[in-house]
Image (cartoon, rainbow, N blue to C red):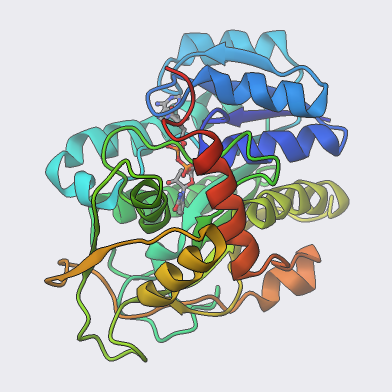
Length: 341
Ligand SMILES: NC(=O)c1ccc[n+]([C@@H]2O[C@H](COP(=O)([O-])OP(=O)(O)OC[C@H]3O[C@@H](n4cnc5c(N)ncnc54)[C@H](O)[C@@H]3O)[C@@H](O)[C@H]2O)c1
């Protein structure tokens, strides 16, 4: 089977490409490298001993997409390519809607023209919004997203549903990720954010390696066990396995049409202070931090009910917090500046 992975040079994409290759899939990556380095693909090739067809290009370029699909007999698309910084999305909403929503429409349009009907979408726990009770379940209605980033995910899930109703051959899976962290156990590939990290773990790791002075913890007066926000962190390799499971599920369930959503999380919430402590233990480094005011839009705590993915996809997160921390530290300490620029 040949899979097109958009955004495959990025953090989650590169780990998924690695696992697809080791599971015998052929992989074509389309990435404009706006938030990634080609070095991630080179390292994936080195680690697997297999070749990736890499195309530098944009999902909004329908001509390039059409020639890609004409050149490669693609069976399914895993669509990671997106802008993903929640805070930034409120500052430049049009860029987010343009890149994420319009980009996805371009991709789906070209796929429809060429009758390519298998689609796996990188959705997010943010689609549940603040209205739903925790733990989040797939049967819950989508919430009012608190950021343009979240809204772009809600919109795309809606587009997929409408598309599936109009085309009974279309088969899509929305994977709603909780909080992916960690890195491949080789320490060769990992998360390499450009500029100031938006997510907790890359920030913690950069403080530990001496690249940043201290971490700001946004709020310690939430109604959680230690007052800091709690999230459902899962290892990026578990997440990558979720994508392989989803591809296999689509392949096996040939009678399925429509869109199916699955939560990918561990089902457990961990606080920011617990993350700092676990990271300090795994890395044997100090992570200085200060308590800062709450950040607008942050929910106190959310986590997944991941039973559906377990029952239907046969998937479960198996790597524990210690492994997430150890692998993050291995990546960060081997590559203090990220991929060579
Ligand atoms: N990391 C998380 O915490 C998280 C959580 C939930 C959902 N997601 C979603 O998972 C996906 C992957 O996230 P990630 O953390 O690997 O991010 P990332 O930024 O590392 O990867 C995204 C990749 O897409 C590429 N890209 C962006 N716009 C593109 C375009 N128009 N054309 C071609 N390539 C483009 C970037 O260069 C990058 O390589 C995104 O859709 C993101 O919204 C991420």
